[in-house]
Image (cartoon, rainbow, N blue to C red):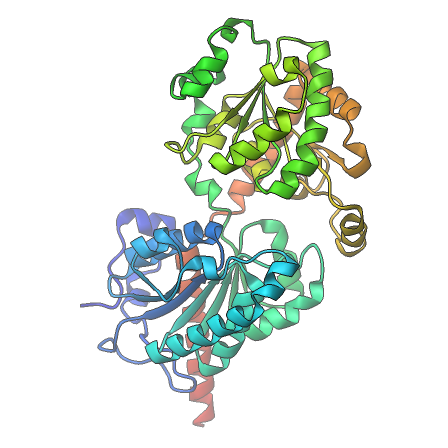
Length: 455
């Protein structure tokens, strides 16, 4: 049996590895010896996802690798999606998913213990590769221990050194052989420091349902309503009277919701004075999120409450995407949702507010002038950002009113479409093939060094 399964025709068209290269894939990565023969043991890969979002990335990468080779042994930490691809998870992913300074300090001793357990398990399994997915504070420390032992180390999702603390690049170079970036704007810093990095693209580019951009908005809206009991009840008496539908996404964390949603509601209240037939939909990630959002809304006036549908649908994993696609425009907090809105071709307004001290510190540290991903990707302000003191009810109302006009709507839409096309063109590398090819390059370099040393 060959070490790698022969790729299908689709695989060859996507990123051909070449049969000659496939037939000579090494099994181990010894610290000094050249490549080992084909009869060696299976490829053993250590992989760690530090939070729930990394579980999807990890599962996608594992599936790609499993398609290339059928004898991989996976060991590390991941969620249910990664486990479904064959991961032997050493402990629950939630043990590493700690956010916030206070929370991290409280869990510091257990995080150190988890790292020791991982390193012991990886050494016992004699892993060939280590793939750290996001969570750089944890994964890069693990990689730093493994790389000197001959393990091929990859960081999947670049730390935000393009935005702040660029000096971290030295630690990244020390800990990794390759960084897989999600966005093209992350590459220049690695090029400046001569460290291998490849833009493989954000997974949303591969997983977003294309029907959401190809189906007429009115049809998407009708399907969304009839698939959800809460929306059926909300629109039963007003469906024909709705002038515009605005999707509102105030973030998923309680701190974001309590800080940003009241500002959004101030703007929505003023918008209803301009157009009483406006309606708003707020998709929530779970039932607890729904209760938090509804609690904030319940403190407002009855006309505003009646114009808002707060909806959660556990049967639809991509419900928030469906809600955005079925709306005319989106008002949202900064984050990945801005990328989703751009890929769904929905004009948007970004609202964000931080603690004033946190904002002042970030303002001095962060080098990027924008917070919304579409603006960062475009290199210019194509989407309005209302940040801190600019995020007032009057400004929100004025900005949304303007965006609902055909000229402003179409102008932003054209910018979003152009930015989306550029992102797609620059994000065409397959993550698994990228790692395999870089591994080959490392092995060839090692072989040359070993050969030269014998003369």
